[in-house]
Image (tube, rainbow, N blue to C red; front, side, top):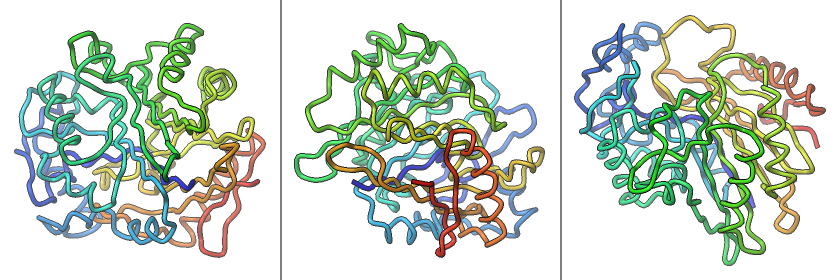
Length: 364
């Protein structure tokens, strides 16, 4: 099985404004009152950005790179509310994309949208209900949010090939900025919040997985955790990721929330992506964290053995955001990403090499 994974796909706010059916641009941020302001910031850095762009525009070069590798399944962390209604949550930053713009996900043949994150309910419970309805009506599987606690905890069940299922469980941690009151409850919509990473939390995750698992299933846990900036992986994340593999028999840990890629570990043959970084966002033109090169992003391609479910191969394709579109990273940019990720992966006994195709490969 080959999977395409990436980090945060943030198609709200400025990205929504250049798509064919933008929401009203009004924002409730302390320093920006219109989503069009983020478009102007990007234009001040990179030049004029077209409006009412085709749905495949934002993916740019990534579409060919994904299609060429023919992944069996494509999974993203969709970090935005999908609604034209609702009331903004009083949290300072509120993302939303108009439901009529969901064609931007269809353009990339996305199979599953992870919704356990700190922006999916930015427009209140009504906006979350709209989000769930719109995404599911558009034909995408979801994990990590639902109309009640049971629905939010239920996995996306994806068929990679006849008789071969991938179960995607998704969780969001308070450390990523998820408000506590967003947690789904009985008869109340919300996010599948993992309030802590202690033994009780692990027991709950094990119970949830065992409820759904059938012999032969591959299990992926997608988890939104940690700070936006910095390369340090908290000891609690490492311990919990190991426990997911050792005790919950998880095959892939798909971490996100960081705005730049973090280290990758392989534990007992199973890959742990501690932070995939942003993939699509409207941050172009925003300064303040240049040392992390947040304009650079990675598409992850993971090959798993069909029997043991261990990692056979992992390739990462580097991109740069330019005019709200993904373009292949240059040789220099790819080298910087490779050196940075190699430094972080070496802490976990792995290293990164540059391939002849200007992609990054995780050591065997």
